[in-house]
Image (cartoon, rainbow, N blue to C red; front, top):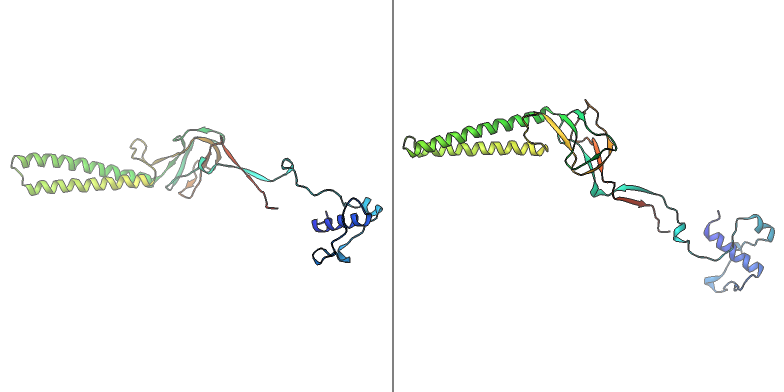
Length: 233
């Protein structure tokens, strides 16, 4: 197809040569002067075999514009689910196309690191229970004058230390996105934070995964974004 500038020059030159319509002659002023090199004259035979189309200049109707584009998820309605801890995939409970609700388990992970953190928490919890009982016994003895106030204060300080140990162990589990679970030590459930449809799945039983792994993608298909490639011209 001829470039737009050449097409306009051809159209203007043809109208001048044929004397068609009410088109005025070229403006002889410096701003509107046409040089011989810019004028192309076509006779009727050349016009019939050319791709030149003569017509009015107008805009293209909006309903005829064709654009390329892509459908994508609303960024606030999609979630890439993966572990926060190293481990090996034990089970995969969903496949692509499955409908899930927020909090549903998508898969299970065996993690020695998680098992160690849960054991640390259990040990800290047991130590705190002992410290609580010691303080209770010491307070009874102190009330009867059997032990000194200093001993009671030492027992109270020991309980505070056990409280701090238990809080640190619980915080370590929270950093993994896990909670103490003595019924399944070392097993990390992969849960979706949103409801929707499983649109992608990269989990395979026995695979070693870590915090960098994206095992499932869950998206809400009730509302999508249409991204169109629309240029200024």
